[in-house]
Image (cartoon, rainbow, N blue to C red):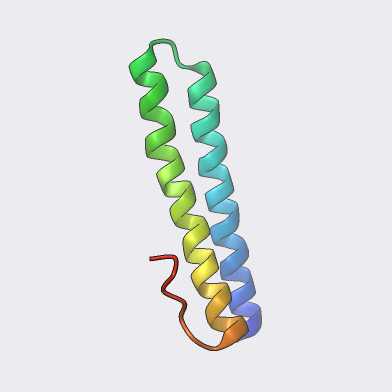
Length: 71
């Protein structure tokens, strides 16, 4: 069970990092100010969500209970 949880945690961390990178890239590359604000807010919200899900999975497997601090 721990190996599956480790794989899921790593998966959600990679997804979170990817969306964080996409949001940063959009902030740099897009032209007008509204597009520059739109890209990071959409993409980094998904990125933070991935990191929070990974944190929930890790806290459940490491400590044995679901931590609701992330929510």
